[in-house]
Length: 323
Image 1: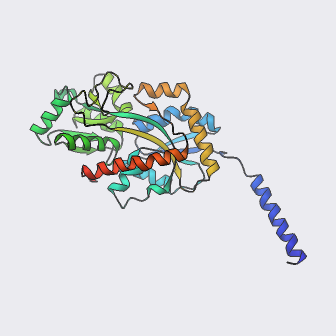
Image 2: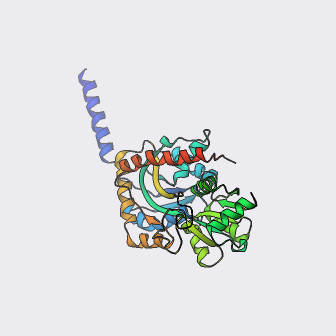
Image 3: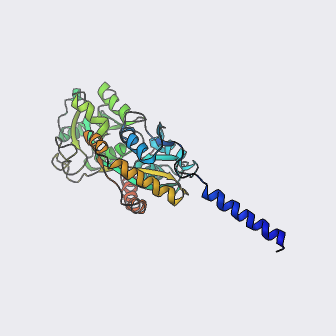
């Protein structure tokens, strides 16, 4: 290398080092937080309940964007294909991460296209009916669904959603026959039951409980085997006469695969800080949702490996199809 080439190489190296040293720290602009369901549902409620605390922890605005459709696959694909810079974030449930890819091999993303950051909440589903059905217990629901197959319609927040899988497990274990009516979000599914367009729903707690408290929808049980301290007035499935039934779902934070590790770490730490705020915990608890944080992004990734097996097995065993 001649002297001129050597000096040029040194100069380029210094310039690169200076550019790296002067690179703005993450985050230096607002974050887009993508929710795969319509406003008013559980995912939307969780995102908005934590958004102010999240924004403070990050030092940047957090903008919630609802992208409903296809059981949250539209939102997951959008984030999977976004720049891997930490500015486009997905709040997702098992439906986007495990179920939809298992239901539809043509979905426009793979689970590996999304990088886990942390689990943020867990909660049971709530089995509820329209009061005009006269159904007052899980046993009465099973009896009616067996006696008059497919007379009852059940609503969910979409094909492949946790409520859809909750209902599928219910029909698998009981032999009850009901017709599935998918909507673009949990609030829309619950509204359909209140209107009488459908009669049954396996809804998320934030979608169901406000309407149940007003008497516009009748809750029968929670989807966990035992009573949940989050919804203490409702029986668990064992108490309701279906001890083999047990299902709980979660929401988590994801970013595009390839997002730099320091960015993931910063986002994880900010999410933990936000979810530990008592105001956030109290807001979520009022709607039957519990804060549940992973110990690290790596621990969340390990959790997903085993959790996905449960959901995919349920899809196959219950013969769930995209309708």
